[in-house]
Structures are given as C-alpha cells and as structure tokens.
Amino acid sequence: MLTALILAIWAYLAISDALAPRFLMAGRPLMAGTVAGILVGDVQTGMMVGGTLELMALGVYTYGGATIPDYLVGSILGTYFGKELGFEAGVALAIPAALLLTQVDVFQRFINFVFVHAADRYAEEGNVAAFDRMMIFFSHAIWGLSRAIPVFLAVAFGEDLVKAISGFFEANPWFNKGIRVTGGMLPALGFAMLLKILPVEQYPIFLLIGFVMFAYLNMPLVGIALAAIAIAVIYQQLMYRPKEV
Amino acid sequence: MAEKKLTRADLRSAFWRYFFTFQFGWNYERMQSVSYCFAMIPILKKTRPDPEEFKEAFMTNLNFFNTNPVVGAPLIIGAHIALEEAGASLETTEGLKVGLMGPLAGVGDALVWALYNSIVFSIGSVMALEGNIMGPILTFLLVFFPYLAVRYWQFFWAYQQGTNLITQLGSGAIQRITELATLVGMIVVGGFAPSIVRLTTPLKWEREVVVRGEEVMQTISVQEQLDKVLPYMLPVGLTLLVYWLLKRRGWTPMRAIVLLIVIGFVGGALGIFG
Image (cartoon, rainbow over all chains, first blue to last red; front, side):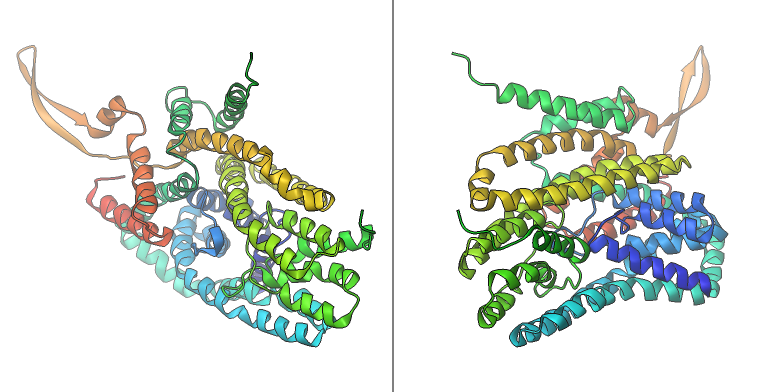
C-alpha cells in the first residue's frame, strides 16, 4: 500500500513536471520509468522498461494537444510489475495500460474547463487572490490525479489481476511474441510523426545520408548526431555564402 | 523611450509564474489560457492601475492561447510585457499573441519535441537498455540546463526587443536556425529509424539443388536475401508506410498504433515476422 502511494505521488509529480517546469521531462517514459525503478528499489528494471517504452514513443508528442498513449503511467506500472515478473512482462503490461488510459486523458483534458470558467468569474470580480490560489493549489489537480489514481489502484489492487495476466502470458506464448514484434514496430510511428513535420519533400537526400551512416558505416547514434550537425552547418555555409563579384 | 513602469522583480515574478505553472489547467476549451494569464498578472497590476482597466485586461488574457511551451511561449510573454509597458492597447497585445502563437508552435514543436528531444532521449534510452545509468543521467542533464536557459534567455530577449521583435523574427535568423535544425533532424531520422525500429522475418524456403551430382536441400533465408538488396529494408519500409498513412491518408497516430498492433500480432502468430 505504501508503494502504491509512493508511485501514485511520483505519477502526480511527473505529469506536473511534464506540464510546466520540465526539470527532467518526467512525462517521458525513460525518466518516469528510471525514477520509478529507484523508488521500488530496482533501477535496472526501471531503465529497461523506461528505455523500451521511450524508443516506442520517440517523437510521439501531443502536438497541439493531440491524444497519444499514456506512456508515463505505462512505464511506472511496467516498472513496478516488471520487478517481479521480469522487464519483458512489465513492458507487455505497460503497452495495453498506456492505450487504455488514453481515454482517461481525453476525459481529464475535457473536464479541466472548470478552471477556465472559475478564472472568468474571478476576472469579472477582479479577484486576483482567488485566481492565484486556484492556479497554485488546484490547477494541476485534475491532471495529477488522472495519473495518480490509476497508478494507485493498479499497484494496490492489481496483484491478482496481474497474476492472472502473467498466467495468461505463460499459457499463450503467441501473445508474448505479438507484444515483442509490435514493440519493435511501434517506434516506426514516432519516426513517421517526425517525418510528417519535417520538410521531407524539400530535402529527401539528407535522410539518405543518415541511413548510409548507420546501415553501411555502422556508426553509433551519437556519432550520427554529431556528423549531422557538421553536415547541416556546412550546407548552410555553402548555401548562404555571400555572392562573390 | 517610454518610461519604465516595471521593475526587474516584476519581470522575474512573471517569468517564474510562467516557468512553474505553464500548461497547468490545460483544457480543450482554451488550452494554455489560464496559465498565460497567471504569468501576466503581476505585470497587468503595474501597467493598469485602474481597477476597471485591470479587470478588462484580466478577462482578455483568458482568451484562447496555445503554442509550444518551451520555444514560443516565453518569447510571446516577453514581447507582450514590453508592449504592455509601452502602453499598447488590448487589441494590439491580443494581436501579437494570436499572430505569433501559431507560427511559433510549429517552429517550437519541430525544434524541441521532434528534433532535440528525439536525439537526446534516443541516445539516453539506448544507453539505459545496456544497463548504463549514465543514459538517464545524461538525458536529465541535457534537459535540465538547456531547457532552463532557452526559456530564460527567450523571455528576457523578447522583452528587450519589444516592438522590434516582429522585424527581428522576420529578418531570417529564425528561419536559418529552423532550417539548420531541420537538416540535422532529417539526417538523424535517416540513421536512427533503421537502428531503433525492429522488424525482421524468420521466413525461409527450401529448395533442392544439385551440388557435384548430389541432390542437396538448400535453405534460403528471406531475411538474408532482403539484407543483400538493402539492409534494414523492413524497418525502413514500415516507417515510410506509416509516414504515408499519416501524411497522405490523414490517419491519426492512434489509428496507426492499432494497425501496428494488428500487424505485429497477426504477423508474429503466423510466423511472418519475428
């Protein structure tokens, strides 16, 4: 029960950090999972679950408030249950949890209108003190609870459910396989979302450079990123060189 | 030069209010409006001492607002404060907000979410999956300091630029930076997508061949054949397929996730992918 409470508080803080201060982008699965791992005393599982989900969610952001799976709660629950069941089972649980909670997110984004309407009233009254109070103490509550409550319920009461689910996994190896294959494929969505906001038609050739560096030259990711910066700077220096007379 | 109505403390107060609460109370109806207004309150109190005028500004600043919270929002708030101090009308400041929030949302989402975060978080995750705690720590450091610095700098830069900001934004510097980041992003996506998306096939077929007069069963792995044609063909093809569905067919990300799950389960169960 104490663990449930601690992880619920972490979920609340993590979504609040993801909304505003962004000290560590705690809404991202890598961060949410690693810290959850520290809290349950199993950093390795936290990093494995968080890292796996992070790669699935790479580039997947709420552009303009669009709905995406709740990987934050997914990675906290995946870490908690992965500590007992192994990180792969944790990930296998985290994905359906993240998808199910999408609906909760849509609902809470909707009911947050109460704050706007309260603010309208305070503005008409010119009541700054009440507005400040609302912003400081309450404006994060619906967001926070929408993450904290599912985490608390799942950790406090989910033991039997999770036993049943892990029994199901053992009895149906095809399900595990499906999760594994799907997990490898999901990052394609993130990259597709990135490509969608990049001007692919304008500079398709740059995609090829990165592909060659990885697929044929086997460069590590940091190397590709550094080379990318160098190539882009050189390109601009050549493109925007003052015309010689 | 307009007289300075605001002290450094007022500006700092607005900045920290923005920093700690921006997007709190985010909702479909007016998105970031309440937290935007919350950041402006200490400024409006100084620039509009008349209670009726203050109330009107308070109400107006609760209008719909949405932009990128990291690159975009601090810039708009800083410029808005400069206009407030110079005695601009509410129509002018609302015009500034509405005019800048759309373009900056596009630039900010591309720079911060799509490019910077994707690079930093994928490197951190790959290290984390090797069991290296430096992965998350490195990512944390690359979030904490740059995020703080870029917001602080934007806010005060935009305030100092004030009314010049629009000409500054039009001068091409922002476009240059965006293009640079876009190019880096394209190269990185080209390299990261095949390294992170995993899709292989265990399919094989067997055929009889005659080797030195003896009939031998030869096994041909489809994956090996694909790799000979183009390495990472399946992950690259899958990424391009999803891109095409999102871009040309107008699919939502959720719909694409459902498709990937169906392909993953069916393909995994039938032994096509594995």
